[in-house]
Amino acid sequence: MPELSDKQLRQRLPTRLHALPRRRPVPSQGLPDYAELHCLSNFSFQRGASMPEELVARAYQLGYRALAITDECSVSGVVRAHVGLREHIEALADHERENPDEPPLPRNPAFRLLFGSEFGYERFRLVALAHDLEGWGDLCEFITQARTTAPKGDYRVDWQDAGPPALGGCEILFVPDRVLGGPIDVAALDADLTEARRRFGTRLWLAVELLNEQDDDLWLVTLQQAGERAGVPLVASGDVHMHVRSRKPLQDVITAVREGRPVDECGFALQANAERHLRSRMRLANLYPAELLANTLEVMRRCSFDLEVIRDHYKYPLENVSAGETPAQTLVRKTWAGAQERYPGGVPPRIRGQIEHELALIVELHYEMFFLTVEDIVRFARSRDILCQGRGSSANSAVCYCLGITAIDPETGNLLFERFLSRERREAPDIDVDFEHQRREEVIQYIYGKYGRDRAAIAAVVICYRSRSALRDVGKALGIDARLADEFAKDHYWFDDVILDQRLEEAMQRSGVRERLPDCVSGSSSRSSSRDFHGT
Image (tube, rainbow, N blue to C red):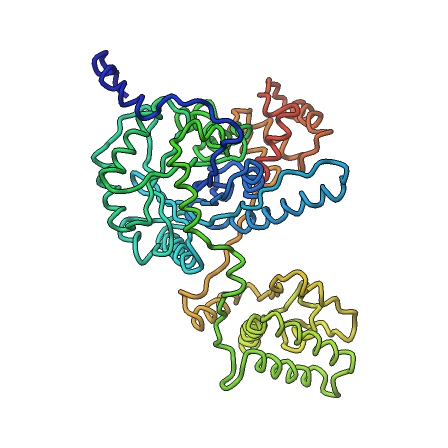
């Protein structure tokens, strides 16, 4: 930012004071309610430094009303967040049962999750938060379109893709890019914000992210004026990348890995401070005008979607139901027809009882179409002489055996059907089928041809660092001699606090490299950092 003259500074002073008036510290009993609307987890690869479960537990503990998981062009982390919230609440209850003499732990019954995603444009980012089930569908379709029109691992969005009907069921946060200490292009900001207002209407909010940087006051005034000119209300958000500020060293390391150079050469690519964590409500109250904090609750009220709704409203395609039959009737008919083929001499009484028990539970839980879909794919493969075999827990199902999905005769063993499908777990069964790899593409094309490419897709698998690859990348990011990092990684398969330092010393001796390592590589602090990176 260019130097200002004394006269310019005096002219600017009243505006700065008006933007951030001196306020008394907020007393604890007057803490404002707050919902964090912009938060990245480690599912935003090499950006977020905390797991969804950690973020959820921390937001719950801080008394937030809501937390939005908004990973970049992805909703991969939301399931972990959803399960993490449930498990955190269960852990509190378990602790109280096991320690009845201790005072009850603080609860946050109003806390809930919001579900969305972040998208990067040339001069700004958009954060979309799903209103309801329809909005969730809009968001997922938008992500799919952005991913399928770009090279693998990337995505592409532009103004032609945004706006109704693409994100019609979502609340939108407009987050302007900010260059620390740099000039603010007010004309470009006004143009982008006006266009966003035209596209999203009253669903648009201008996000204000104050991160204790040197020009926070000027940034706030600039956004207030831009919002007033465009008719867009302002809302507070935190651009959260970690659940606690102590994750900043890990944040720096993953940034260095992303940049492909050591931490000490990353410069302004590193975050200037550790403010992108879930901050206390008292700190937020002393940073943001009260209206901006209150507006987070209005955004929260407009976003009522919950992942549990998908289970109750998902409409399974009915292509495999015979004419004039319900899904249950088709499944029952095919199962008993298959049973007659499997047991030409008559179905044994024990197997008959097992089949009846399984069919009753499958129909009760409304999973008939799932079994019919898998049966249809397996039947296609066998009709083309493509080798295939069901495996895993589905081998515990007599229905799967009768449908030709698995090959293990239930009469020869003791079935553990509840391991495969249980009323108490309320989880869809997992049927794994292996196809010979030389002809797997034929099966994939059959599925695309039957359901259409807009209704069928190959599921993505998200993997995390293994110990050895984590050690190599962290070593490179910290500028450690590659010979030492490689030698240490070869002999290290897990993080064991007892032997970590000993193994590191042995690696130094084998590699012939002796150097003074940073605190985050040796000692107790390093063990924590290494494990954290291993999970990203």
